[in-house]
Image (cartoon, rainbow, N blue to C red):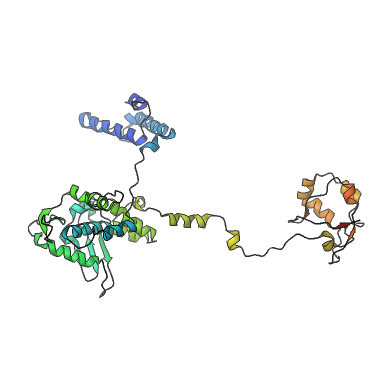
Length: 394
């Protein structure tokens, strides 16, 4: 078995993606477990510890070579607000006929209460309570709640949707649509013994009625992709997209995670898989983490350091303070002088700052003749002055 894991590959010689390799090994394991009571995926069985290590190494090697990316499934997307509006505008959602009413109830059961695809088949009339402005969904059975011994300490999920303020009405009122649907199917409640919630519309489309035939799981799963998206010309969405829509819409609107979990019934961190981040949220996060926009946010008026040296320091700035010999005796390059604050401050400390404030015209100082190149910048302590202008005359 170790040799098999090391050498198994596709016909073209490429390695299998890690998840595919794991599926192959698990399939063989199930067969051997039934025949010989072997379970080499059991971590407590040390007889197969080497096999598990080899398998782990092969999966890592496959990922390292980039084969893991080839097994990435396309991400299921939520139904956008624009797509939902198209469904309404084309009459695919609404209460115009039995078919559109059925599709509307199915669509909003998934969107309002975050139902899984299989949850729709488990719905019963008793799961819903309708008041003047509230739709309450009381879950009786789901993937995370079975009502057995393990669920004795748990309670079934109860989700409440406020359609509008009490005493007010508005177009596309879901309360009215739910009341209408429950009114149409309540005659089947005693006959089907509370075993279904969705029923086929009457074959005679002129009649706003439903037949005593419950929709099966496959037919329910085809409502969104085949009856709604395909007829509206929208990208294909699966039944599970409605559950993703629930989590995504609430997440993008800033709703607290606890309220999202109450709606969707998530008990694990798998909720995060359904929360799709919008471009606006990404831009907001980027703006928070990015550098400050100095042009937009920094209103500080920094002083300009472009000045006339003789206007600032006076006519006698170089007289008897910095001689030609002193400057030329400094054994430093221009860059060293520019960044060595100790030397620069020592030289400039002798400058007389009691100077004239008016522009003074004077002959060119001898320092320009004694030094091969004047420093490109003057450095004071923690300050650098650039673009110093000398006003010279002969």
